[in-house]
Picture 1 (cartoon, rainbow, N blue to C red):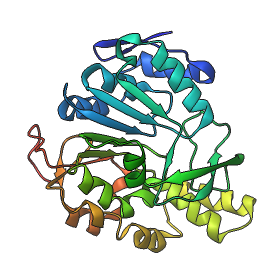
Picture 2 (picture 1 turned 90 degrees about the horizontal axis):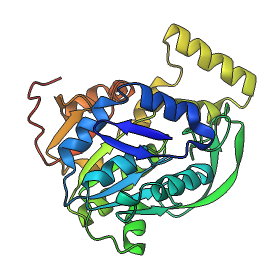
Picture 3 (picture 1 turned 135 degrees about the vertical axis):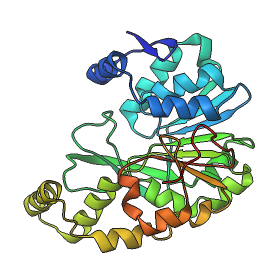
Picture 4 (picture 1 turned 45 degrees about the horizontal axis):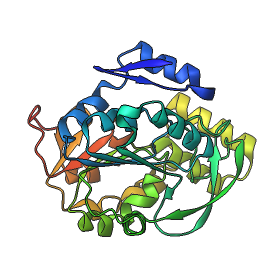
Amino acid sequence: MQIQLKNHTFQVDPGQNKHYWTYINSIDWEPHTFAIFDKFINEDSVVLDVGSWSGVLTLYAAKTAREVHALDPDPVCFSELNRNVALNPAVAEKIKTYKTAISAQKETVRLSARETYGASSSSILERKRDTENSLELETVSLADFLAQEHIQKVDFIKMDVEGAEFRILPTIGKALEKVNYPTLYISFHYNFLNENIYHKNIPFVFLNKVLIRLENIFGFSLYKNRIRKEIANLYDDLKAYNYIYKSNGIAITFDDLAQKPELIKETDLVFTNVEWTRETKNN
């Protein structure tokens, strides 16, 4: 299957996700993401794609970057990622793939999925609505991963890890300092964190589902204070960054994130020491 990502064409094997690839190919998919990649990745960049799924952004990054390291622990995603890399020999030599799960530390966890592995929903945050949770794996910290793979230069990190960011970010400082604070682009999954807290506090699956549905309909938050507490120290290891941007390029501050933790429900965030001059106005 041939797909078009902005001005680049790729070949992919859609596997079980043909509907996703068809959708990506049929619309102006995530223009803000491509704008961020275009802004912060150049021909000398070393990129970490943490949570690469089947490789859509891995392939796009490799068109420009010098080197791309793509990580995904989901066995179906990883298999599709490798097939898609192989189908694009013009960029394949720039890409190295890893069936690796990043978390706060080395530990054994279960990887759960909403309905099936490979569908871009696999998470190490347990949730009651997940129907697949049989896969056990060992995680590694980002610092240990970089050391094990002898990666000494990183310029850009894309992190889309289905909720694991709430485990990774409070412990990421050592890794970021080691590679001189590369631009960090994070996709947040606030609802996954909410579901994980429900999972820990409400043991009954049916009641769990009903309460979450009512919350979505009426807008109340049963565990709002618990979530705020969970997020309170999320950015402590990121304070060396001079700039924070919403995914549309609008600048915000650490104070904005402290005052409104729910902001991450609305936007992905870019932490960087490179000024994004296309927008200068504040929140």
